[in-house]
Length: 230
Image (cartoon, rainbow, N blue to C red; front, side, top):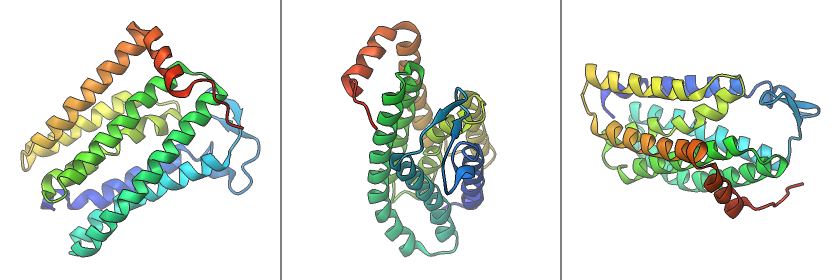
């Protein structure tokens, strides 16, 4: 890992704290009873289920792994870093499964088209950035940058809980990342690849949401149908 990115454990730790803070009212503050939970989104009662707990656990484990991995590299524990990297394959598979379950649970409660559109954006972006990080696992400079980008899809769901628009924050993070490169190593290629895909995916979702909602609804029906989760 290049010296510019020795700050990564602290960056990921800060992001972890922000996510926990955003979900505090609607989830963590209700531990261990989880009764009479009110969602900040719509200010409506929600039921915390086993699916909710499973999803929360997988995301927390992933965010903790993001903190641990660069810390191991900085402290020259490269072999342990590689072993945990292999463990991440299973963790990400479980997290993907939890994403599917939680999205299905959400849409069984309320057919919310904007939320479905957000899911179409966040989920593929995470998978692409994580996939690129694994593909470039032997090229540290690329690997670390794609791992940084993998947090971007978590921004919208977290900030939505505190009624803060996620898109400006995401764009601000892109500006920050390019700015760091400008003043340091000037290794723009990973971020250009990531930003290009991000904009493409965002354009597709905006088109579906604003210009072709009928197609978006058709996609929602094809994927989720009218399955109800109790």
